[in-house]
Length: 277
Image (cartoon, rainbow, N blue to C red; front, side, top):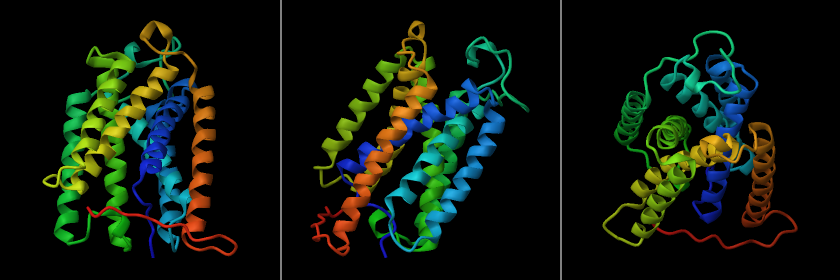
C-alpha cells in the first residue's frame, strides 16, 4: 500500500511552505518565546517522534500525517542546526536578549563544520540505504525499514538545509533575498536537468529536497527579520500563523485529491500520471 506521495508540482509547493513554516516556527519557540535552542530542540524532536510513529503506523498515504512529519522535521531541524552552529554571543540573540532558555546556548561549531558533519551523516544513511537493496524512489517505498531510512534522511537533510540557508543569509553576503534567489536559480537548473536522460531523477530529487530547505530558511528569515537586516520584520508569530493556514489549506486540497484518486465512495477516480525515474 502506498505510504508516500507522488512527486508533483504541488508536492514541491507544499515542501517549500512546510520548510518556510519550519524556520519561522522554530525561531518563534527558540528566540521569540526565549526557550532557547537546547530546550526547543528537545521539545520539537519529541514532536517529530510522535508524528513519525503515527505516520509509520498508518496503513496508507495520508497527506495530513505525511506533511505533519515534514513540518516537524523542519522545525526540529531549524533549532538543531542553530544549536550545532551557533553560540551564546549577542550576534545570535534577538530583541536585546542576553540569554535564551535553560542549558547550553549552542555548540558554536560554525556553519562549515556543522554542514560537514551533517553531510557525513546523510551520506552514511544513503550508503546503508543502498546496501539494503531497497529503492530510492519514494513512490515505491512500502516497507517499514524503507520508511525508517527515508525519514532519517529527511530529518538530516532538513537540518543540513537550515545550515546552508543560514550561511547564505548571514555569512555569504547575499542577504535573505539574495540567498533565496540563488537557491531558486539552482532549483531551476535541476528542473531543466530532468529532461537529460543521463542524469538520474532520483539524484535530482534528493538534491532538490535538500535545497528546498535553505530556500525555506532564507524565505522565513526574509519574512521575520528586521528591516535593518534586510528582512520584512513581519514577526515570527504572524508569519507562522499565515504559513500554517496556507499549509493546512494545501493539505486539505491534497487530501481531497487523494480520496478521488483512490476511488472513495461518491468520488470519480482521478488519473495519476508518473514519470519513470
